[in-house]
Image (cartoon, rainbow, N blue to C red; front, side, top):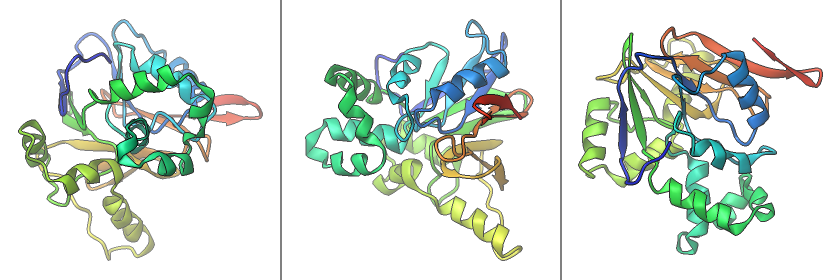
Length: 254
């Protein structure tokens, strides 16, 4: 993904030559991501991979994220961990301590120039990506949508730079919909599913689920690569789920 200017919302037309996938939080586990690419027979000439963010931290190969960020077939929305990296480079934000507490210690072992380059790329990452698919338009953000639950309103606000700071924060940090999903599971029927208006589905990461979970039309796809060893991708053409995970020092696709 290479952009020369900031676009708050990136829109991708339907892929007529290949396939589109959305992948959950990688968190520095690029050995799993490599396995995923192999499992789906990914073709970089025609296929596209869209990440929900949090490609770095908590895993053994966070430095490899930069390589993928530069690939023309790899697309990425802002995640809260990428935000912490960028905020730590800018000393005025005071994010360094927070980042260190959340997996940023790998940064001590890489050249400062690499971190500067990653922070520079972050400036151009979108908050949201929309993609045309055979099922309709789907959206991708890192964590959640603001309380208004309208994709159309969100996109218009981001494009016009009129989005509330609290709404922008929700895109990177919120777990409100996830909390409602958990309550619906634990206290069946108590919490009604909420649907995001103006979109077929929205795929998010940030909040860990054992298996991809749908609540309304929000799908959680962070299956805990860094803690469960499970990395998930969705084929946006077929909506098939692909999960890769380690088994006896090797890896398997499930």
